[in-house]
Image (cartoon, rainbow, N blue to C red):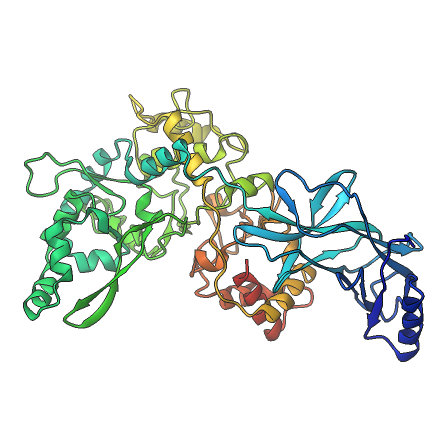
Length: 564
């Protein structure tokens, strides 16, 4: 046993074993642990606690815990938050069939966007464990099957591009306002005519957001007038399509850009931006005749949370072009926060796979760490490598939003960052969809990429910490981590989840997304929004655990997901 080992104590053992451990502790020696009973051992002056499950050890062992002075410093993206401790089993050939819990007291509690993680030392490098949990206020837990290793707590900050950088700020402007010429397509589809006839109250019901900073002053004044006459005028304004026109012309409708001639009283030419589905505002509570109501009119919130109320399919289904093409029932059937990028409307059907598989709008966050974990982007995991996000953005701007681009061809803005080479049938469609004069540029795509990389998932909301700890342990020991196995709780390039009943390009399954921030990304949950709550999502997956999760374990996993 190293000479720097501190006093050890063990609990939850038979009386005879507990007495033996007590004598060992008093003599400052290693603790013997029964392979049959396991043990909870505390050492290093109470700073480290090991919990070894009953039956996990291959044989009885002596366990020692020792502080390691002069251990290597944490890595460039890590902050050492505790001393290093060596944990050793004797004999060293003993193995663990299920993980032990290593709990280490940190010097302080991590502060979001810091993550508290247990790391192990390999050479001079600290490698974080895939499964860590912070037990309030500042004890960090990790799961390990190593019979002997050196551990410490490290704080890792979710890595992002500087959100104040010039490129990220330019990227946000592109995300908010750039159409890349898609106004030609959407005006031809009939979107401008539709907006001329839509009442603001109906637009709000479809998920439309309004940037308060751009709302014309007379409309703001009317919305704040709570006199009897003002309430009547407010009700009238919210049901008058002319208000919708005024808001669009002022640039206040998030994700809709007016290209009408200055003298046009009505909307004659409009395009859309990524912000339509991905951007939210902080709602404002107004007094209406019916009472107080929170409306999606407020300042922009730049946090990556998707607009789960946006029913883009329904909006498109109401256009004359979609109705004339017989696509209205399909588009209207998608529902809020779902869109099939492989539908016949997009870029003259260049991506049409002949199937109806609408998917959710994913959150925009943690992309730097997801890239480092080997996660390929897109539900089908098509985009990976250098410029993966920029390449995906080019595909969306051109093929999904009908911008003037040439994705996948020699005239494209950047080489496609695809994991597979598209088949000839797709390549020929891409060539046919290419614009004669593309307006999508590599510089703007990389700016958008920097903005997307500048956002970290939001801090967790309220959760039951003791239950969350139980859920953390169940999640990482009962099979859930088989798919969500990286420190970002995502899959990597090889992790694919089959989808029952999926056809077309999703028949091959989806790549397991990261779960950090999951409670803020919905509801709904899953790639197609089939789960209306975290509890429903966990219940749907519980049968994949071994054995299936009980109702109590499911509730605990829900609390763990809230903690991420």
